Image (tube, rainbow, N blue to C red; front, side, top):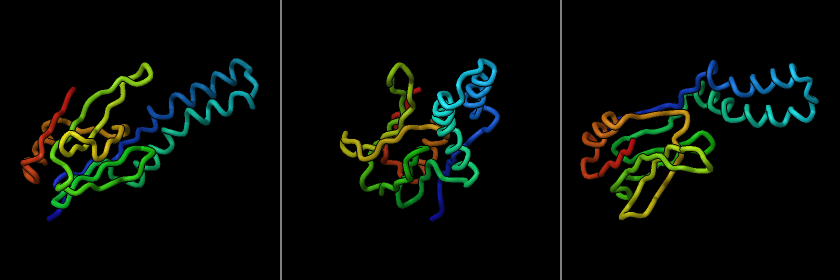
Length: 145
């Protein structure tokens, strides 16, 4: 059986690179010492550059097929969990260090089998539920907006 659902990373250079470019521009305009500001610019650029690379390679962020569910995040490799180990999928927003982080957790009998941050990709409830209904109707979806 072929893939039922495939979601790939989606980088947008026009948006993703704005923070490091603004930081570099500020350094130039404010005559900020280059060596002091460079680590800050590099730190701001790591996530968008990795996302753009993963997008260009068309890396899979989420895949559902007959064998299981594969989930990845920007900085974590993709892991496939067989359906026999999953009976519930939770997608929710978690507050973490004064910011909101979107997560996906795969559970088996209320225990997390695999958890990942959703970053660089997105999925809507209807699409995911339809794919689950076609593939594994016994897997429950808890999708909190």
